[in-house]
Image: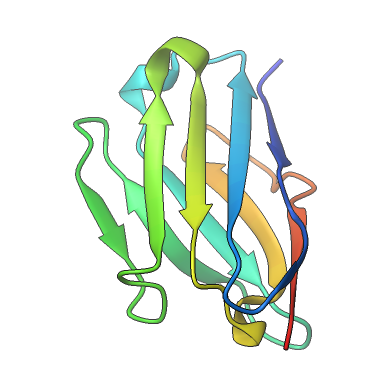
Length: 113
């Protein structure tokens, strides 16, 4: 069964850091590019970061220089290191790959000012 499970969210003060994890199962992880999306209250879901099978990365302008996406093919997992967090980063964060048909449950990140 193809699954993803996001974890690592929580409540953090502005300027703090969190590391999100996304564990996958039921696929050959190494052949898929992966993305992190987020959805803030009352807003549309937006792409935050993406990583190709070869490790190339791309970021939304709003998180460049603060967030880092990485992957561990041996663990079938993708990560999002978030530093210098801002209140506007508050959202539910989801990982995504083209092998998915539905979004996972996501993990909530709340940044207090």
